[in-house]
Length: 500
Image 1: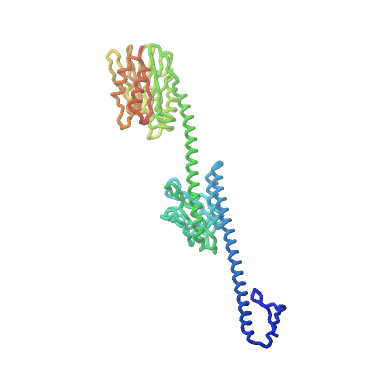
Image 2: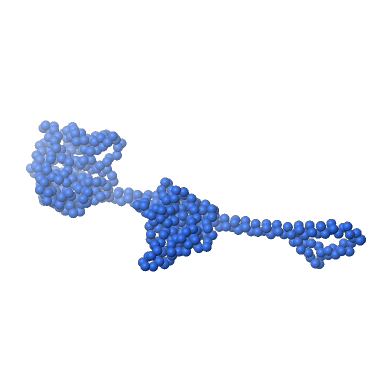
């Protein structure tokens, strides 16, 4: 009888498990029996090896699954935070922080940085840099006599990057949108050998800037999977940044539109709400701004008991700057006109006061008429303005009245005061004096042709016998027909005075 130890599945033998076999002296069974025992032992060892390998594989897959789930959760958290930034009061600094910190968290990096193009589009400005992020630009070898980690980091956080400069500048000018890992020396204050991902932020045909993340010394290099994730982060960040720019511009436009409406309301208050009653005369005036506010100005001023001042002016340019100069002109002219019967003296006083405050590229053309209803006469001064047009009813003619003068704001007074002169204008019954700004004669149609002075005169000739209101109506109707759908390119102001 031969006693054998039974083999286990793990390839070992249990000493207590004995199998008693009796071969009745027949030894031919021994060889196959030992072969069977050896096969069972080898199979047990192989099964043990396969089982251990499967357990390791399952563990690896579970680890990868957990890693993917964690990464997926981080990406969704990142997108959620970007969405939250737009749901409330969007602040650019907060959006920049969330982008960089989100990228660092998802890729498990040591630090990150966001650079955006400045207003000139020639440099990248650092918007947000996490603590511990290595300088991604070349740090000078000597800063203030010494180079330390602190001085290098300060330089990094303040330095604007040129195209092609360092990792950031190279990424900005990269023709390929794909990020690539970079291992380099980022300056004497920072150890070498860090892995970096840097990618330009492109959206809607604009290169907005660069997003970068960096690993620490000895960290595993970013792999292809990290690059794919970072590319998705950069694309979403570019979209968020572009949306923030559009949101800010829309907000600024809304605020500007509101401010312009307020300015227009104020300007409407400054312009006459109606025409004054002048014994022996009828007067009408109007203003049509080309934009929200006008650089044209007209006004009626009580000079004394017998005289009314009628002013018209055109500030060079359009919009807010012109409207502000217009408001200044109105205030100064009203102060100078009280009790002053000479229109030329009034314009001289206005020029002296406004000249120091008017930019070199701006000026004011103006005409000022003093109407004496006691005598039925007019006195006119013209400071570089379009010549008023006089309709003579008896002859049915229209001629330009051209007293000498130059525009306000060009000369401090030496030449201006000498050139400017008063001119008396005598009106008979039915005669009409028309003052206008160049937005009338220089109105453009869709082909770019001007309405022209001849058409202005013809309209006055055909309507002046009906009175000032008819003149204004005729001119505005003809201008509207002439211009058609073409937008008004300049302010239009008209005043008509007729003798009754």
